[in-house]
Every structure is written in C-alpha cells, then in structure tokens.
Image (cartoon, rainbow, N blue to C red; front, side, top):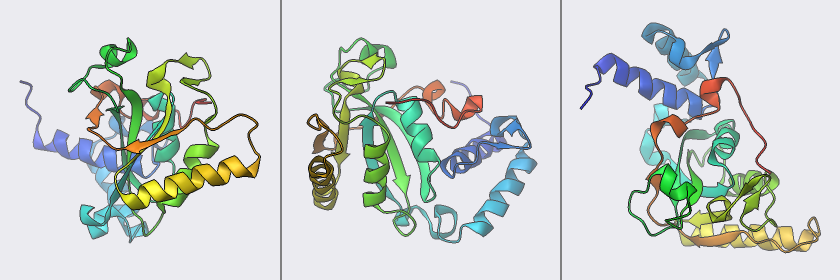
Length: 218
C-alpha cells in the first residue's frame, strides 16, 4: 500500500475543494502543479469570498444530488462550474454489480450508468436550479445515447434520494414536456438512488486536470 504524506493529503483535499468551486488553475498553472503554500493562499482567499460555502459552515449544510447525462467527464465539468457546488465525483450507479470497474461498466456487464455525485450548498444553489442545468445541457429525448456515446451506461437519469427530490424532478420533467421544446418524448429516468461507486481516480476531474472546463455531452 502506498503511503500518502500529510502534506500530500492536504494538497489533494484543497485541490478537490477548489475544483468544486470551479477553480481549475492559477496563473496558467494547473492546481496539481502548485506548491502546498500556493494552494493554501488560494484556499484561504476563496474561503473569505464564499462565506456560505462548506469551508465556513461545515459539511452538515451540504446536500447531494446524482445525475446521469452521458459521458461523466463532461457532466462533471458542467456542474463543477456552478456557484454553490462544493464538490463532485464521477462514478457508477443504478446497476447490480458491487463496486464495478470502468471496464466492466463500459462493456455493459453491470447495468450501471455513468453518473456524477454533486455536493452542493442549498443556501447558494437549489435542487431546482441543478435540474435546470441538467436538462438544458444534454438531450433528454435520446434513449441510451448522447452524441457519439451509445449504450445504457450513457442513459439520461435522475437518481433521487428524497421525496422532495423526486417531486421536483418529476415536475421539471412534466414542465419540460409541456413546454413544447422537444418534439420527441423525454426519456429521462427518475429513479431512487442506489449505491454510488466512485470511479477510478484518473476519471475524477478528468477535464479540469487537462485545463478544459467543458466538453460536448449532447
């Protein structure tokens, strides 16, 4: 087992938090290229600017949401840019296999969807606003496909963890259906949240690590 120093553990914690706030680089340098002291300076400055975020109020004020809308790299990058989103993780949910690997999910052996776990501060951004971003940034009428990505792992789905989330998700889907924006039926699944398995580390903040803030997911 590879031992991680306290300084390295602290760096990773700060990088994850800063990425969750939509901060990807400083002076054209990726966060992971910065020294611990440089990261501490950014971290402290950002904490002062965001009085309502998790650094000041603690994780007990945060809530969670899980969405699937195609390749999870682009979906994660989308939510990372939102003010009020404190952290994100990409992974797999909605399947049967315990702790699946990316290769197993890619081969469609597990029934899981590529998904993003979003932690957010409801005092800054609401679940309704997250739903709006979700529906506006992929094609919810495309069954098991987003762009060139084809398969059930790329399905459109909302995994709710409370009755309030279920009610809001269903209302958002009905409102979008009756709006006339789409000619085809909306196929987004609204299903209870099940175990969320975090994907391998190289998938986490994949685009941000490469200096990209978005990719085409629709």
